[in-house]
Image 1 (cartoon, rainbow, N blue to C red):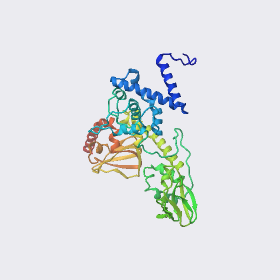
Image 2 (cartoon, rainbow, N blue to C red):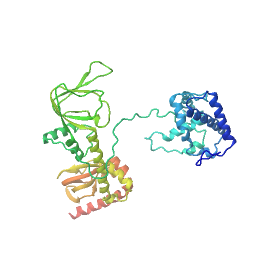
Image 3 (spheres, rainbow, N blue to C red):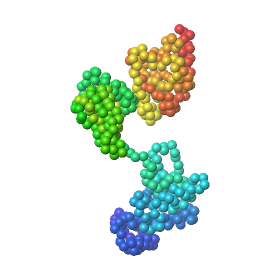
Length: 450
């Protein structure tokens, strides 16, 4: 029996019987309006009967054990479970199905497999989707399909207990030249006041020096009059504000109260609205000016562009820098990517001590630019330049710093914390240990010479 030139089906009794049965069920149901759903339910019911028969025999035919089989049923059965509709050809409701799976447990707390084969297959398809954060757990999908009697460990309820997502713009950092920076003129005093205002804000704590400057330069001045409402509770947040001058009161309305309650005030140097830089989230409070005032505002798009573009550019620079570090040449490219993402830049002025002999060490350093001098017991023993590293001895041996390192001129270093050092530099730890032995030998010889 040919449908068209591209598709053909072999006519057989089973095929004709199925169509005849479907037609009979359709007529007896009074020609339901949702024909597609009715047909899907019909074939799901037939498939359930077939799986039940195979289960009694203790095995599944090879073609049914194929890995992709569970996904065929997911959408059609989902529509019944999500809508709460009862299967027109089954006595079990979706809620009953959930109860079967969640409540049938043995004395050890393990779920007993009393579900139908269709329920098992749909459940399995969800377990494959699983929790996206559970990267470390692995299991054999084929083994679960082969063992029909295995305990069921996931409920077939889509998105149950999943995290609720938040909304923000989708942005893609450029891979080419630097983005045009937004610079709004300010006096040095204004820049300093903005820096002081955002210094303790959690969103700005991890910015490097360049990002910090870009944020300050991108802020726009906003004149506000007394009694003006700057932000309103429940409104969409799109700006973060730093107070240049003037005063503001913050009010919150709780539990549908008619009168808002004043909770705090802001004056010169204060800041508010920082969550707007992360999410399209409703404002949590109302801010009203209690005098004429001047604000510096930073919008979410500019803030995220600065962070993403700078982060993308920093990663490219770090990857280029890491290729020049002899210690890391043995790392695979993807391993260098991870190290690059974990690095932080720190700056030191001329004569500033980076690490001090005898202190407890918690960071590993690589010199990006500038020079440093190493002192052991007050004597100069070494000089370090670009791509040199130090601070690893204390992390390798959990011992105090073996020497003092002092910046000579302006010094910029890339640093890794102790946990990241162990986790990301695992492939080169042996090299570091061998080098540390050589380092002690060099220090000893230089001290004897001096």
